Length: 258
Image (tube, rainbow, N blue to C red; front, side):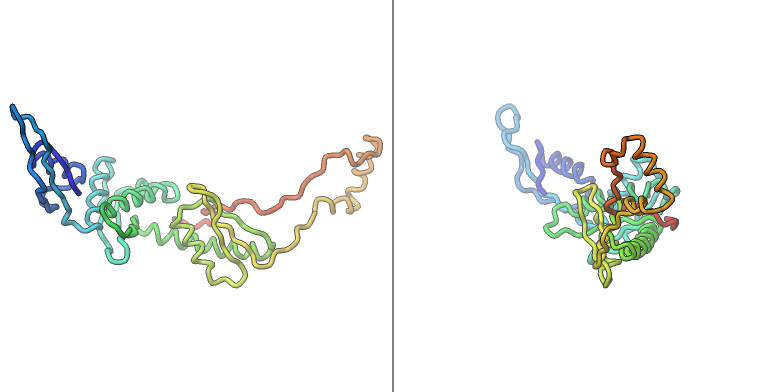
């Protein structure tokens, strides 16, 4: 990346500050020196190219540890994998602080680390930030939830919608049911409220259970009294509508500890 300054030293300093790196972590190439005019006034800025000699994963780890310091969090980040994807493990004095409700804080850290790791890269590399096995526990919970709700969708012959999830968690739900012979999955809605819908292959017709109540003996008396009060005009009574589908199921419906 190219950076400018009134001098080469200033251009380098500007680049290091923007990249958040030390001089021994980069390779510097001088493109052109500053050009001065009368009275020492700079006519043309100096220009340098700065490339980090750190790997993408190492750069992301360095960023996270600097962020932990600014947040006042006692935590340590370690590069666990850097091949097809970058995996960073985080150990914290209080892991709940870095994980947050259903992993929201951890997801935010992962997004930031991914942005840092991919600076200047043409091909995006996926970054996963884990904290003391949280991702594995969450995945087990989501897989169990997916199978449980798939059974429910098949039993009642209705679509089942889950609550909004991030792309990483939606992929887990899709993968858990990809080989199912009884249901299929689809994603609906727009980010950040995009959610998974489990669709049974065989849907059952909706029963009008509310209308059937009038056929029960125990309700006949009430119906008659209602008709007498309104002069027998049953059609004026407000009609109750049967629900059209299941409600939304929460991603943390299972009582699995995360």
